[in-house]
Image 1: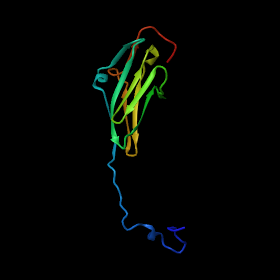
Image 2: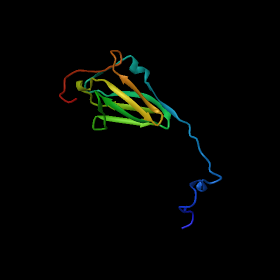
Image 3: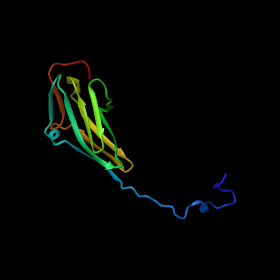
Image 4: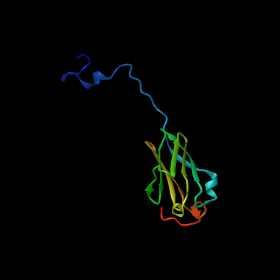
Length: 134
């Protein structure tokens, strides 16, 4: 087999003279919540809520949303749409159990960023009839 190193050959012989290194730009993740969320979000039970955020970083960060320390997954009521530069959590047919602290987290090789929808001003509150689901 050609191109194989024998035990007696030094490893340095195997670095090509024309070896080119590529340096890709890297940036740690940054999250910017939509300005509308800063004023708080109140929804009526049965309505749809959307929690949009701008997410930056190079390489594109992996994004996850959590509610009360539980990772959210798409289901019949929850949709998570994450594209380069943006992520949106959508909850349809809201119930009072959707009143909670929501956290978006972005992670790439350069670091981690989080944004929390939690304070009195930005908490998600669902008003209306109670529902045993949460």
